[in-house]
Image (cartoon, rainbow, N blue to C red):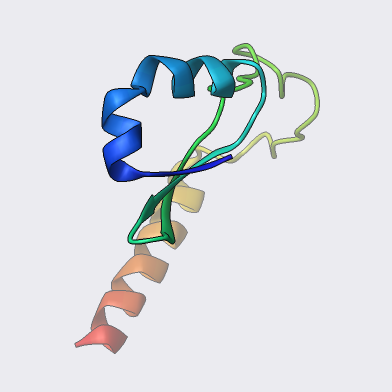
Amino acid sequence: MQVNMLEAKNALSRLVAAAERGEDVILARDGKPVAKIVRYQTPKVKPPGAWKGKVKVSPNWDSPETNAETAELFQESAMRDL
């Protein structure tokens, strides 16, 4: 359904009800579509720990040697950017 702004101002409740039923409501200015009212859908968020057991990490990922190597890579990158 497409409605002009003036009609939308006077019938917002009706338009929201239409969106709740799954209808797309197009708002138009001077007959040209400018916005859309659609039904809100709650974002699907995975619970914490969804990746547990799916990623393998090296046992020395936090060793002093690995940290020094990583710091050196960042320093080299920063020097190239200058």
